[in-house]
Length: 408
Image 1 (spheres, one colour):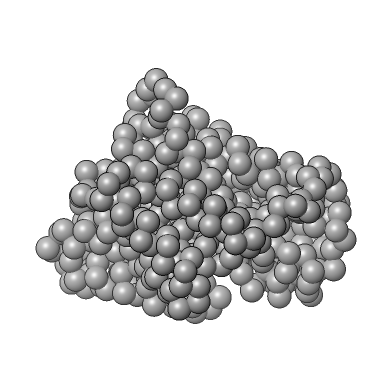
Image 2: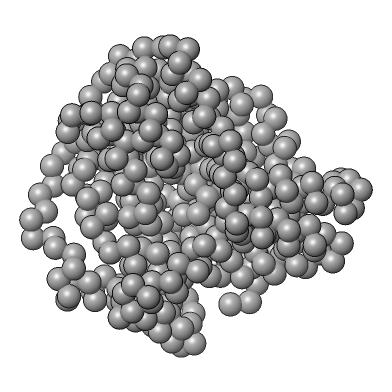
């Protein structure tokens, strides 16, 4: 699976990958995990079943991320699917047992897709400039969010931005570590993160016997499959490719699909290759040496398992962080990836206009037929590339510019 050979790991190699893994986990729980609780409320789930959902999805994401990162020696970051309002709406009208059955059908479809080998072939057809433009467009909103917090919480956002710039000047390697530590300290001093009432309660899995129906297949399984494929797996693979990693998509899809299938009866709706949070762990901020970045995948997996073991309690801590802290932290941690992606997108003169079109289309975050902006940005970019150049390039598996060598 890997193009990077395993190398010895020393204690000093762990700091940056571990922090990158922690930030990706904080951003995931602090950003999108509230949707799980909204969906659970819509489905009328008991507190025990909700805790089981948290347990199953966190443990599943953690284990698959660790296994894939260890096997490939690349930072394979997994996460739960984020179908947003769709899942909240679907669970309100679908019996929970049928929803579990739909989760299993969707997961089985991913296993079959991964074993077929077709997904990897599709990934290899995408021109590098278009892929880089897509990634830059997807991440742009997070970069904007880093500075948008100045209007909402100027002291917190301003502190993080100033510290990031100063640390970039003084000690580039510790800029992201610094804003995480200082930001948490600032919140604790202000009393905005209250840990006094925290009680770590072990989560217990609750098994639900699946039921299958045509309506759940059409209203839940099929949309979940399409949204996860186009909104998670596709950009997730492009994140890996953009930072020079060459793991095949097929085993990743197969392993995460199998994990989703096993965890579905305990409430997990789907987990998959991460996209946004993966970019935090695949770039230079995770480690100067690309061959050490796989440790970020291991670290993220361990943190996910820890959260899963304690169910709702630890997840609630991350979700208690102010939104400005989450968005500013994520945006600053992704600045290097955004800059590198833009540089790669504009590097190839022949494909520059198609790459720019892809970037703008992805940044617009078009939503049609229930499918999100990543898919439509890619479709528009590929159509533009073919129209402008006559055909797709014969060899599109390597990035235009090696992002590992990009300037800070």
